[in-house]
Amino acid sequence: MGESAAPLGARKTYQVIVRGKFAPLDGEQRAALLAVADQHDVFGARFTEEGTVTYERSLLTFTFRCVVPATEEDGEAVVTGRAEALAAAAVRELGAECRDLTSVSTDLDSIRIRRRGR
Image: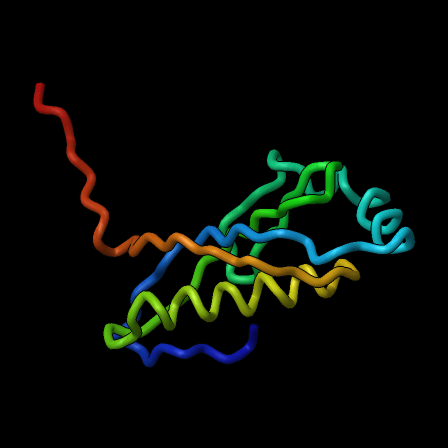
C-alpha cells in the first residue's frame, strides 16, 4: 500500500497473522482457487507489507501474514483492523470473499533477544 500511517520517528512494526474462512464458494470460484493453490501453500508464506495468503485444497480456511507499520499511538485494534482489511482485499483479489476473521499481532519493537552467556 502506498500510504504510510506512521510519521517518521514514531514508527512501530507489527507482524500480524489473520485467520479466516472462505465465504461459500461456487464452482467457478473453487476451480479458480484450486488452479493457483500451489502458489498459496504454507511454504510460500512471508511477512511483508503486502501480505501473503495461504490455504489448503479443502478451501475451508485461509491464513494471511503481513507486516503493519504503525505509530506509537496506534492500538492493537487499529493494527489488526488494517491487517484484516488487507486480508479481505487479498482474498477478494483471488476471486472469493471471507468471513470470521481473527488476528494475532506481535510488536516487533518489543521483542527482546536474550543472548546466552559463555
